[in-house]
Length: 338
Image (cartoon, rainbow, N blue to C red; front, side):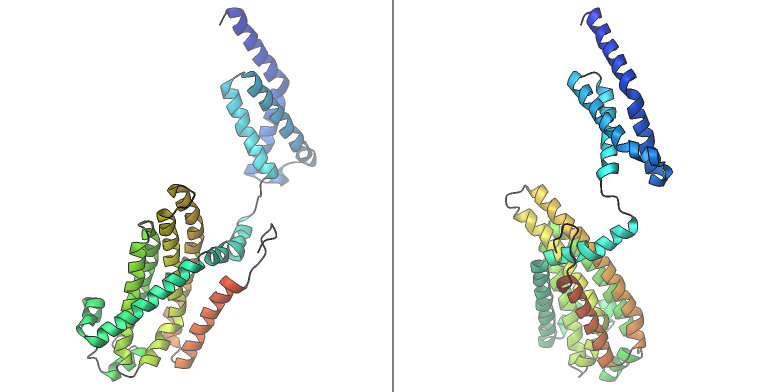
């Protein structure tokens, strides 16, 4: 490039800056102040000038792109215009509004989207429960194979009905409290793993849910065989209706990711997994909330409430509440869709 041409470009760039730089610098100053503080930091005149300065900056960007004046200047103007667009036209919501939107739309919407996988997870849990029950019923040695030895401690099918009954209502020697703590910790781990391992074509997720059902079935047989099935069911149901439902949802989230990776349809596997992951992530935040609620029910309700009927009533009430919240009560989104 000859010297006269270079000098012409420099003069053109200098002229461009001298004519327009004042506007975009003023726009940048207003946007920065508004972002750091709030619109209240600007006067009425400054607020009214924002869209005018934004259009002026857009015009400067258009000219800079058309004439290829300076790549650094173009990048600067693009960044400034993007900031201005999101500030002027983007949806700005506070933390409380975002939290409310999650509870009203995102969480129940994600659960409804996962209804097929949730049904499959519930079916797997039931199959595991029946398998664990029947295995221990056919051969008591299966109990030690299903329930960890350090947890069982020799307390299994051979335990007396009196000792088992005492554990349901007054803690006995602490075995049921130990089992409850183990079961809650185990269920939290199962929920996390069922979701996290879903990418492996959902196979580990299926096995985890089946195994969790087996543990429940094996333990239930011990009490059922001593005539305490109804009582143990109430002891478990007061918090299990929430806790086990949360596991099924976590399993559903993991299965959604695994099945989308295995059968991506018209999308690439990465895009299919990313799309499934957005739904699954919302569901898993809700799972954490449900497990927290289950932990409170287990830590307080199960200890303080000893009436079988009341235990079933509370557990059933929470289950009905979750079902109504997820599947029946549908609020409209801002776009008018349920």
